[in-house]
Amino acid sequence: MSQLADKTLPLARESQDDIAQLERAFSLQNWRYIDIDRQERLAGILNRWPLLAELAGAAQYEGQ
Image (cartoon, rainbow, N blue to C red; front, side):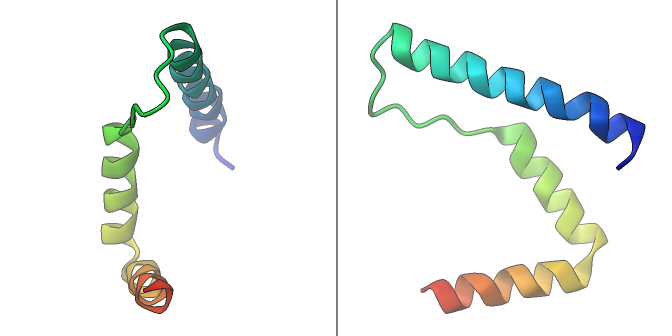
């Protein structure tokens, strides 16, 4: 794993912890958090790796 990835993983975990704390503090049971940054990174990964995108599409198709 690259050094950059090692530095970003703790930040992602911290932001998830922050969201969980907000949910508990304000009793947000039905609140749906959407991580837009994560969605954009995933879309970029799928654009760079066409075979991975194809496999992800096949997995979604089987799940329906």
